[in-house]
Length: 468
Ligand SMILES: Cc1cc2nc3c(=O)[nH]c(=O)nc-3n(C[C@H](O)[C@H](O)[C@H](O)COP(=O)(O)OP(=O)(O)OC[C@H]3O[C@@H](n4cnc5c(N)ncnc54)[C@H](O)[C@@H]3O)c2cc1C
Image (cartoon, rainbow, N blue to C red; front, side, top):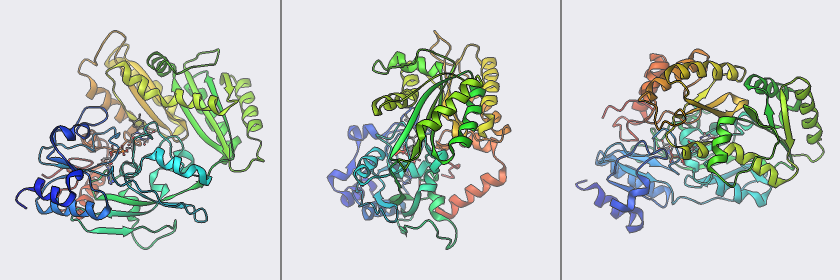
């Protein structure tokens, strides 16, 4: 193919190809750290068009970068070279009819998560994945990063919610794995392999997703905890007392609350007491007969008697519940609006959360005294977004970003956890993975990549080193 841009325009038509200024909004990642101007942005309207684009790029030896909502936090959805083509899935937005008897639905990869939630509402069904970026993140991107979010500890990550997949392979052939069953041991678990592959093994075009009945009732509470250790102990107690009804267990700190209230004037905090640590607890049930309020109230009483819970309020309306959730979900936005920040996506065994936060504070304070630490995240699965803002009055981190990242990654590794809990490696963390994971593991990944994509055209420079 002499001129890839012309060939792609012929395949896609005028609506399907953007270049120059028109491609502007696709070029940089959400954190504005990565991305160069690509050859262009292909916007196919169907799975066969995706396949035709990928095949044409392979023939021209052109790199392909799959892009969903571009909310990824590791720079995996933008180009690293001007010759690359971004393949945006944003026009593949069909949502099939849900199947209530099987608890599944067929969707295209460009469906926005919030649009899926909305479409399921009238059917009394839900797709149990919630995250702050759900208004923009798309199904293909959520699969690409194996996203987690606030309900992952109960329903699993994306790989637990995907039953079947259709994927365009790096040579343009199509794998039709659109089966709608949980049990399918006919060989390697290919569908799971594409979850978290960050677009390096192929482009997901359609998926069969697992659905659950919408809970008939919820009980939610916002709590002020005496410290992080208290939050961990109370979380463990709730897991045993509320059992399968525990549906949300999120934490944030007063540093994050202060930033969110400062930058988002429509947010409100209605408890009388402030503390260092807050916990958002939610119980949910598909039956209206389960006494959720009673279970939650008695857990709170126990927590207060033990000195773990300092203050708390149960949501008395849907609006109040939404307010509680916004306090948690606006943590990233509040910190972003404050200015320069460093994000660290850590997981440790849930029982080690408080120890990680304490040890991390000592390490970070030694690197840059008075650095502001804003840990928040998902207590149920030990996922800590250990994010930093510069000391009050400073605009930057004195060139120490790398030191923070390496020290916190080593700490997580030593504690039996991960430095890439739910956001993936992208372009940002390849070297960190090389340092913190054994050579056998990294070599297996490189060989897997080579087996699926021997020419290395599919999202080069993401997840594993690029030979090109
Ligand atoms: C405010 C905020 C809150 C967030 N909260 C969470 C959270 O709680 N939990 C969490 O897990 N993440 C969270 N994220 C990160 C982000 O939303 C997720 O990583 C999400 O899965 C990315 O989806 P996307 O459609 O934006 O993907 P993109 O950013 O477009 O792509 C992400 C990766 O997937 C690949 N990809 C995209 N589409 C496809 C496809 N069709 N086939 C194959 N590969 C593809 C890309 O090449 C890239 O490597 C948050 C982000 C923000 C900005």
